Every structure is written in C-alpha cells, then in structure tokens.
Length: 193
Image (tube, rainbow, N blue to C red; front, top):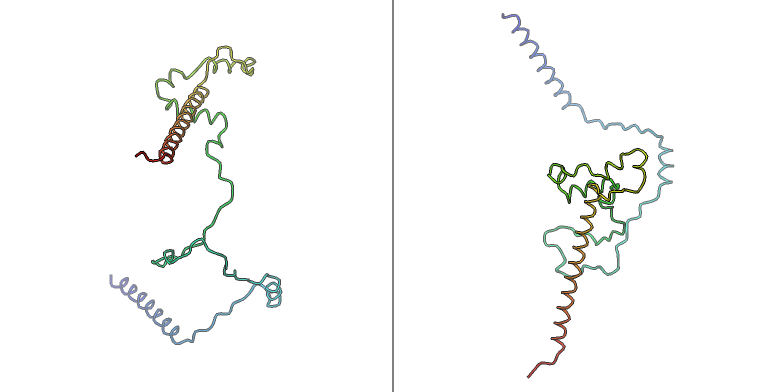
C-alpha cells in the first residue's frame, strides 16, 4: 500500500519542482522582443502602400446645423450624431411577397378563421373546387355553378371590409373638414354686440 502512494508523492513533487524551475528562469530571462515575419518583402510592402490612397480626414462642416443652441448640448455626455435622411425604397410588405394562392390562404385564415371552425369545416369542398378537379373541364376559366372557394370568399370579405374602412375614413375626413370650416366661420364673423 505504501508503494503506490509513495510513487504518487514523487510524481507530484517532480511536477512542482519543474513548475518552480520554469517560473524562476522566466523571471530571470530578459524579455526578448518577438520577431514578426511578414508574408511579403519590405520592397513589395512599400510598393503596395505607395499605391493605396492617402487618408484624408473629413473637413469640419462650416454650414449651418439644424441643431443650434445651448439647449441642444447634451448634459449627460452622449454624443449626438448629425441628422441622416435615408432615401431608398421601403422593403415590400409581407402581403406583397405572397403568391395568389398564399394570399388567398392568408385571407381565409384572417377573415374566415382557423381551419377547425364550423364554417371552414362545412365549406371545405365547394362546387368550384370539384369543377377544377375535372381533368379537361377544370382548366377552363368558366365555373358553371358560380360558387366561390375559400380563398375567393375570403378575398371578397377583405374587399368589403376594406371598402367599409375607406368609406369610414372619408366620412371622418369630411366631418373634420366641416368642423374646421365652422370654426373658421365663427372666428371670421364679427362679434355680436
């Protein structure tokens, strides 16, 4: 039993002695500057640097700034950047990226509800869906039954809702315009004595 523990003590002592010896030699050795090896020769480096454009720092603008005055100076040390106007097209809306089939499916989910509602379950298959599945007749743009599938019905509801929204918006604008006209007429009329 004493043999393995004695070997373990010896190994630990040897490792500790080696670590101390390395630390002492590292402290006593002067710090040598590391030599950097470049991938290119000094001549090629100077040629490359000569062809690069020189750095020209931006000049301080002398034009009038939109922010002027002592109230504009930050009290908390935050640096304010100049105003920046982005002149680029807006990214497309997610609805604009959809195909007609995807737009119909999204409208069906939004205006008819999820697929598990009673309306969607009962109207899952319509006559127009069946007509479109007939091999030769389904390719014709003519649907004899005048029934709408889920996507067409949802787009119809979307059209009605959007039309109602636009009419309400126009009525609100008209009411606001009439109110402003009445206020202008009151202010323009001479005071009654």
